[in-house]
Image (tube, rainbow, N blue to C red; front, side, top):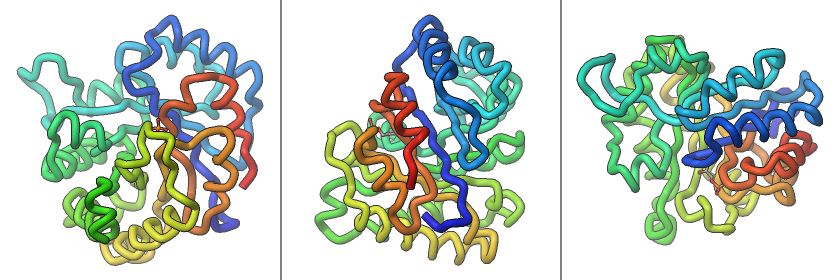
Length: 254
Ligand code: 13P
């Protein structure tokens, strides 16, 4: 991580922690996590636990909230979905877009990611665009090409003012939930390719877009990954579910 960057530690709770568990988690975490000016902490609870999380962080403006998904339309007859406007109204500042589980479990396309990025930006939510290759793509030497394709599909044609506020997360699919973390070298190499494409898409603004690493991050490897050149923060699944390990990750020193 470059010295001037303030790392972002983001917790993606996925389909875990209902309102009761979210409140208990935050009571435990917030009692022990003191505000720090040198990092940004963002939580992505489930949609139904969002209100509980919001109320738990009401006195802690240093702990930010996002939603795990929005639908790729403004509003209307889309039973079960939530829009960017609803997410904003509920108190979200961020939204995950193109997470590998959305792409590979739910079959979401690059085109839908592009629409979601546009809607997020139009409503003042920061999109956290997730990109990353599957194992067979890595083995075929396509890591950079896959990340670049996903970036271009979601970001091409957007004004620099929109891209300036975006965040990217590099999450190799083979590292998610598998215990198989990318090496710091692998993460740095992918982040470098992503950075080059962000510069191509957004010029100088592309140099400042944070690029997070995600995939089997835990309390033991967080500091090493944060120290890897080009890694501006971490997007954490499993290890963000326990207050102890999340606290250790949020206080890890690069
Ligand atoms: P794990 O940390 O459980 O591998 O999940 C990573 C992830 O998908 C975060 O969005």
